Amino acid sequence: MTAAQNYLALKLLYKKIKLPDKVSKPIQNTPYQIRLPLLLSIAIAGGILLGATIFGDNTQLNALNAGYAKYRDILLHINESYVDSVDTEELVDYSIEKMLEKLDPHTVYIPVKDVEKYNMQLESDFDGIGIEFNIFRDTIYVVAPLSGGPSEVVGLQSGDKIVTVDGESVAGEKVKPDNNKVFEWLRGKSGSVVELGIVRRGVKGITKYKITRDKIPSYSVEASLMINEQTGFIKVSRFGDATYREFKSALLKLKKAGMKSLILDLRDNPGGYMDRAVNMVDELVGGNPKIVYTDGKGSRYDSEMRAKSDGVFEQGAVIVLINEGSASASEIVAGALQDNDRALIVGRRSFGKGLVQMPIELQDGSELRLTISRYYTPSGRSIQKPYDSYENDIEDRFSHGELFNKDSVRYDKSLKYKTAKGRTVYGGGGIMPDYFVPLDSTTYTYLNELYKVNLLREYAVEYTNSHKEELQKMSVKDFQNKFIVTEEMLKAVIKLAQEVSVPYDEASFQKSKPVIKLHIKALIARGMWDSEGYYPVMLREDDVFQKALTLIEEAKKLSQK
Image 1 (cartoon, rainbow, N blue to C red):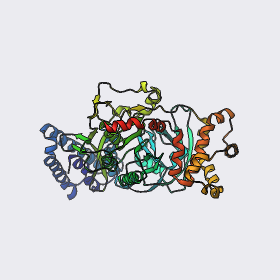
Image 2: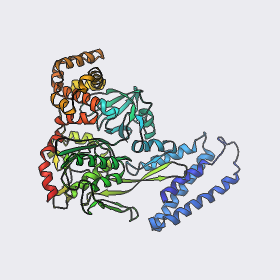
Image 3: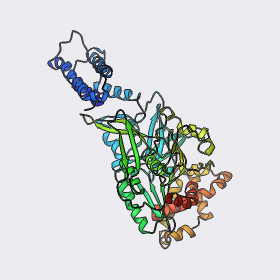
Image 4: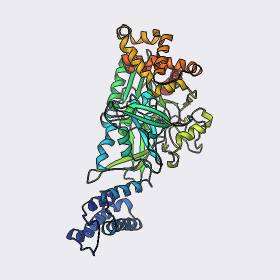
């Protein structure tokens, strides 16, 4: 048992205390109360003995002992003398949560009733809106919409702030959202509807999105297909329980189809299991190079992961796509492949989450996810960005111009490192791409209005259902090359929009028109052929992907050096 477990185990002792709510005469201690100090002393002594090798110094041990005693005394006084009835368990949970706020943004305490919810996103299907979120100073931020989920469909973006749910405020000091509340607000039965009020950088006021909850798929390899005769494309949306198996299967399928070059898309991938990321890298690099290492307090949680098995695709060009929504395990993959000169990284600077959490199951079934170390890329770069940058990071990147101009990217030039073959890379938070591709700054107002009411998807479903026989006669390639979104189809969309109170604006429509046509075509393709149809259409107008295609030859040279 670690010192952290001993400290939190006090919760279990106090849960058993049953004292009068109000006191009118001196309290006579029960036999259990008389034994309580002895029980606490045993717990403290055990913590001291077991923790001696961790803390190693009497000053620290004395401070820890004093902390136990102070916390014990306060809880006992509250139970014995506080004027009103109190829920001791609730107080302990609250105090633990507030204590952990003094550490880092990723160390969390999970009450027993919420443990299953926390594991669902990585281990199984669940019903909800499909977002990865974080809470910073009483505001819910969207880290990334999960690919294929309802939030992605309606257009939620990384950096969005959720300020209302079904018209009720969920932000600010009065509300104080926590993870449990957010789960309650956003999850629900498949088919139920929730309305979110979103504040987005560059958009005035609160924008309302109606989102129909759905089953959030457990698969994490969202797409694997051949873009041309030699180039394969794999989109990984998160690092869940089955990610490595899915990825290896996708590699084998594409290699069998003739893949000589791979574009691996990790954009908006919020991360997950570290070992899945390590295994993924091992399929792409040869020999025994370092993939990632961790460094914690002392040496107890230090580790080093290296490639150890023959991979499916150790030869041939590899390009990895990242952006500001790529975090954690995504950054391990990108950093390892970059530092080992196995891949070119294309896109924008990643999120910057380089902390390792260890789940510690407590005696009552609750869980502490404690940050025990930082992880580093093979060259020695720490991926973790400063904690104080969390709250306004996306806004700061926007306002400083980092999302639109390579020269505006802020990083510490003193944190300079070398890859295996001598290329210069930089640390200080997130993975810096080898080739920067700016975010499209064009505002497509009419397109955004259509997405707010989920109209484009609705139209695509209707069109696919009413033209199914005609579409089934086409191959995916024929559809991509020959299908045209006609003026009549656009008029039908405009009419539907007016029926749901989306006003028509000629100038805004004309500006959005090419993108609206692209999205309609892609959504129809998704309805017919799933991701195999959707991605080839969308990627044709994807600046980051198109840039990657121009770098295939350079990536080949890098892999051959």
